[in-house]
Amino acid sequence: MRTAVINIVFLLFSLQICAQRPQRCDNPVPDYVFRQKQKSVAIQPTEDLKLQVAMAIAVNNCLLVDQVKSIAVLFIDDFNRLDFAKTAWHNTVDKENFYFVYDDFAYFSTVFMLHDYIKTMEAHPMDYLPPTEPQVNLSFPPFEYPSYINYNGPSNCNAPLSEEEFRRLAVQVAGNNSEANKLLLLTQITGNSCLSVSQAMKFASLLESEPNRLGFMKTASLSVYDLTNLPFGVQLFAHIPNKAAYNEFISRPVVVPVTLPPCNISNEDFILIKESVQKESFNSTRLTIAKQIIRAKQCFTVNQVTELVKLFSFDDTRVELAKFAWEYTIDKENFYQVSEAFTFSSSKEDLMRFIDGKGK
Image 1 (tube, rainbow, N blue to C red):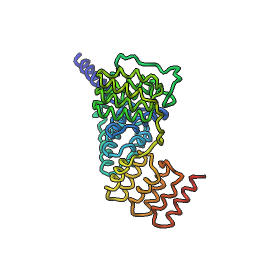
Image 2 (cartoon, one colour; image 1 turned 180 degrees about the horizontal axis):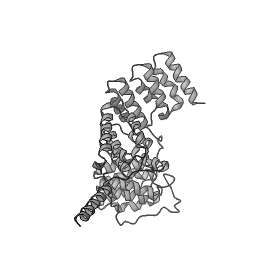
Image 3 (cartoon, rainbow, N blue to C red; image 1 turned 180 degrees about the vertical axis):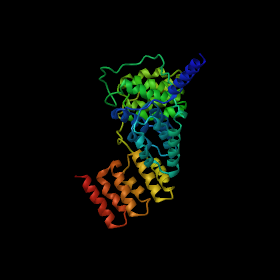
Image 4 (tube, rainbow, N blue to C red; image 1 turned 90 degrees about the vertical axis):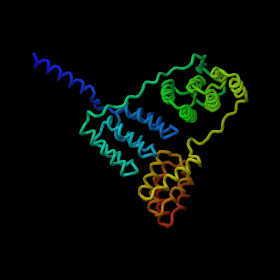
């Protein structure tokens, strides 16, 4: 009898341990789904928000090494990249290839940290329990929300977000505790999306401050599909001055906004990018950082590429960086101008042959 009891206790203990063991990932998230998730990281306006969204993806999805890499390169900070990679390793389908992720780090020290972490987890797999994302209770005020179905009035964009995409973004916003981060994220969303007035109102309701709501609705109006429904937005405001300011704003004649290039890097951002590259002492590290930033930011002009190339002392490195930057340059028709940054005619000819090859 005593032996039977001991066996039962041992069995229950074993079952408890097995229940804690993370389930093996066998099926990676489909590529078309992953691309949407990757974009949700890329659009975040700050490193902290990128890490928050990336960690949620790593926890809740099975990923391939290539997918892990494509998110890892979106970070500028190596320690954010490290935190993401540690979490992603547990749900990586092809762990045997995970060493390829090491290539995306700028410093050997963080590579060693990741390697040591993986070896520890392999030796003691029971020590890891994946973090769980808190469930966000998404709810909106009981306003009268207008429908855009069959709308045929003036519009600033082609078609609003799908409800699925809207709710996914709304959950991201609602999950932030910081009002400032919420506003940053909402501003980024409006710059990349077409919204219905109903969606804009629901986004705005996630902000506590009425002045912030007012500022957001003014910005969002430039990306609104059903412009004549904007008067419904006055429900967002309890204070008379804010109601009056909103009504005054929407009563102005509708002005179609000037369409900006699909992507660009501001002068302020570019100064910070140059500083990030320049502060590195070693040429190889500087080149790695430059490539990571170019791949993450993507929208460089020829003038900006030329300035980055000039940060390097030797022509062979300059040529390598210039060729790498080609895919991420928005005015490729002027790319020949980058050759002005080279010292030797052979380097200039090398780049011109490269450009000619791209045109074929």
